[in-house]
Amino acid sequence: MKKYIFVTGGVCSSLGKGVAAASLGSLLERRGLHVRLAKIDPYINVDAGTMSPYQHGEVYVTDDGAETDLDLGNYARFTSAPLGRENSITTGQVYQEVIQREREGRFLGRTVQVIPHITDEIKRRIYLVGEAPNVDVTIIEIGGTVGDIESIPFLEAARQFIHDIGKKNVLFVHVTLVPSVVGGELKTKPTQHSVKELLEIGIQPDVLLCRAPRPLTDDERKKISLFTNVEEAAVISAYDVPTTIYEIPLVFHRQRLDEIAIEKLSLECGPADLSVWRSVVDTYERAQRTVKIAIVGKYIELHDSYKSINEALFHGGIANGVRIEIVKIDSERVDKEEDLDGLFGGINGILIPGGFGTRGIKGMVRAASYARLNRIPCFGICLGMQIMVIEYARSVLELADANSTEFAPTCQSPVISLLEEQVDVKNYGGTMRLGKSNTVLEEGTMIREAYQAAVIEERHRHRYEVSNRFRPLLVEKGLIVSGTTADSALVESIQWRDHPWGIGVQFHPEFKSKPFEPHPLFTSFVRASLAHAG
Ligand code: GLN
Image 1 (cartoon, rainbow, N blue to C red):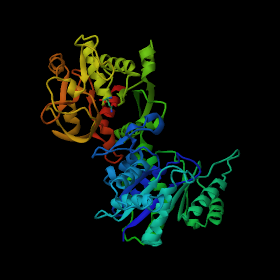
Image 2 (image 1 turned 120 degrees about the horizontal axis):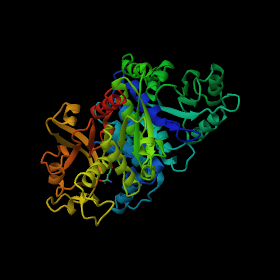
Image 3 (image 1 turned 180 degrees about the horizontal axis):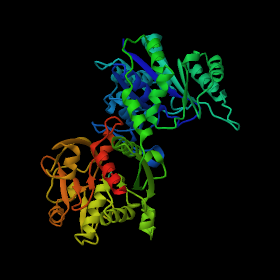
Image 4 (image 1 turned 90 degrees about the horizontal axis):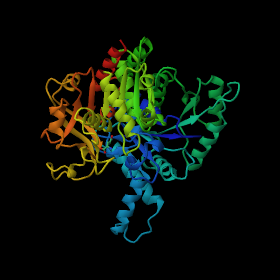
């Protein structure tokens, strides 16, 4: 029988439910079980594609081109479970499907209602993930907080799992906050209340993951257990770890979270081999040196806007045995700054990430120019690569108004433009390029050296491309086109000539990096930045 674990959240948002779900997934996977993870987002948006990174953090892109919540990135970094469109479920998708069926007359005149029609569609989507062949356990994280109006149909669907497949096949894990007040005392009342809210819906949690600044004492755990009817052993301290989030699987394992889940679900599996996590944490703890990387972007206020990039840099640090200090620099500030030497003083590498829209572009171009002329390792990702090309065209090709038609639709030198605007490429359409595709890497280039491969597969999320009209001139003036599509029609990566490390990629390598499988480009970038640090 297939098993389902629902992960809910109480008290408030941003408790790290995603990392908790991913850590549990990892513990089960490391015992030899086949795990799948899915995220439910109770918002009305059909997917995260149209959402601002300011509001919701980064948009995570899967191989099949789904634009999803950033928690899928957590699942990808902690487990090897495959992820695609079906692993991200939103209210928008559920209603869209049900309303479309209603319009097609498929409900045969019945009244279409939240229960059973919406809940049935929610369950259908969850079963689609969990009932796939060779899956033992499916972990479903329900976004938002218990008590939100939007999450009620999803919690009701989760409750129905008990009815449909039996309690012994369903586990409820509730992530809750145990805040500390003046004097360091931990308060359990909010947890009691949020468990009560779950009980009202008909769900008795089996496990509590208590987010707190420090480990809970036995007395605190006893008290929570008494008030919530959760076994004392299953009241687990999810305290703030001083090292890295990659220690969390170890923290949970020490408190027997995986054993509890296995016992309650009667799963048969081997012992947990957690050596990969131990080695990541040990390397981090042993690291003596710190490499300072500046991210020059436009969405820097919210830490999660560049979530996968932050993590991939950390992984590159692990691969080189160093710690990474990320310095977030607002590109608008770079534009206004007179003293760039001061601003970039002590920086060992500059990363220009992806983005959309005009704001902040000038500062990014300035940062690229500074990195190129001062021989600082520079990594341009998606928009970042386009910026590197624009900067090169302006400075080296002396095309003063070189730009992307995204920012300057009528410019004379559109070195970056939509494909249909480019005269010599036809029939590609104007929609966003999304999801995985192959890139062929030129022999003798730094990127090929980093990947140690001639053909690579990476994910895309962009509309604009390097213009083929300007490509010959860019190449003639020394810009190296280091990677293209197999038909050579599209530029996928570039390299600065005679520079220690200047690489731009049109794709998003950050989505595929894992702590124990660091992405080769991030490993190589950190290595070059370490060399810059001397
Ligand atoms: N705005 C650019 C484009 O659409 C880059 C997108 C990105 O960085 N993801 O091509």
